[in-house]
Amino acid sequence: MSDPSPAFGGETPSRPRSSLRTAVVWEVLERALRSRAAALGDAAVLDVLDTGGGTGNFAVPVARLGHRVTVVDPSPNALFALERRAAEAGVADRVNGVQGDILGLFDVVERGGYDAVLCHGVLEYVDDPAEGLRNAVEALRPAGALSLLAAGLGGAVLARALAGHFTEARQALTDPAGRWGEGDPVPRRFTVELLTELVEKAGAEVGAVHGVRVFSDLVPGVLVDTQPGALEALLKLEAAAAEQPSFHSVASQLHVLGEKRA
Image (cartoon, rainbow, N blue to C red; front, side, top):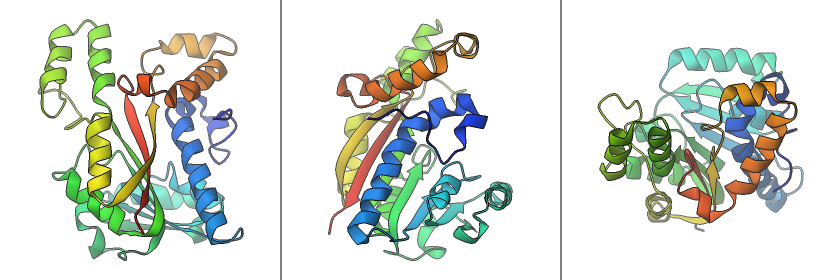
């Protein structure tokens, strides 16, 4: 994996800390979009669906690559912010926000109408992750790309333990949903095995798995903000660790890149 720091549609230089959360996923996604466009013809404009895309953290950079993006999100406030953000980035004509959710996806978008579907931070919160993921895959054209990002179990266990909350860490480890207690804001977490099984059952082939935020959630922010070159070095470390299966089990998030079966 190449150096992730300059990327993300030109957005991260103004928000450097945010790049720790987005750089690995963005680089994998950008490569997948370029590959899909090349398969259709170098000048191809892709139709991309971002389920739960909120204010456009990924949708706007994707639109800046020249693709058409439909964002489905249940929050009207998020969609209003998306519209404003797209306008400020000069891509309002390529970004369309629609109110809805992944379980009712085909009430608002076309089945089988997209070259790529983003499902980032969605499966943790829906009542039926399997159904939600099936909808995401069914929205794809044959051989379309699926970008799936979900909360990882191991990262939460490690974070609670390092914070001294050992009982909560054990609770997360043994809880079927991976929750550390009633105050846990995340309803559900996943292992690599569970997430890849869901992808395959939904009708997609798993192409790659990456661990996201292996270190960045554990490193004190003051070190990143005050040490010269620390952010750049941490970005490179995250990129290198993301591809190593041995680190997937302790990542805060898991990213799966899939392809719909023809």
